Length: 301
Image 1 (tube, one colour):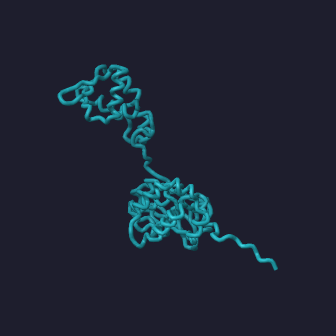
Image 2: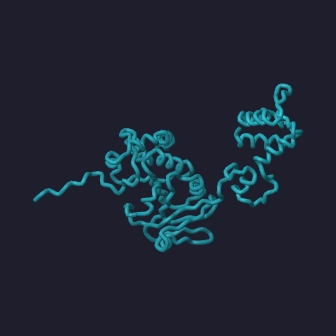
Image 3: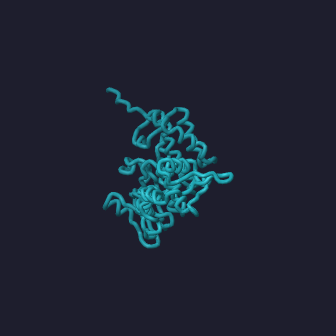
């Protein structure tokens, strides 16, 4: 039997008035878990009552043993300020068994150009100096915090472009944020809560996942966010595009095609998607360092 389904069913049954719980109040999975418990232990019985059915506690001591196997501690005995994951271990023996999101997320940032800084009501993060001294800086974020910057924020999918920044076409100061493949819900919530920077730029792989991340960013209130298209992307897609990556991310591509807003602002991204579909190729962002034209050997004298 599923321990999660049994946990949910027993949690309700142990609190039910007179030890009786309507079967209709449980999911099918929870009913199956109680049915199996009834067959193996006899601690619970299934009774037809009127037009419905109820589960009834028959042996409270045996039922309590099973309940304690799943729930070692009573929620009311735990400190109110206990971290969610610790409480889940105490209540469910599983840190991810209930509400388990961390209170904060952490952004890995570096500056390109100078000066770049972030500030809130209490402090200033001099990102340019931190990048010079330490290579990167980390910022603890919460959706309701007040961190903002006067410089654009670039969200970078792959570490190679975070490590080495000579691909930037301009010398203006920007913040680079490495997000590693998927934009987290906490990062999106943080960006949606208030304007964080004068411009948000997403530089992702040109595949279904990257495009779907862009749609998620737009849906979270980032209407002004820009999807970065490298120079000569058409030629690079044709020469260096990856058919396997295209196939692996086609479902995300189809979802992104349905979600991408209409309008002139998104026409360049639509053009990219049309080309990807026509060629059956996706393109990784490291192609920014590659030339789409084959090098020509010097003519002999």
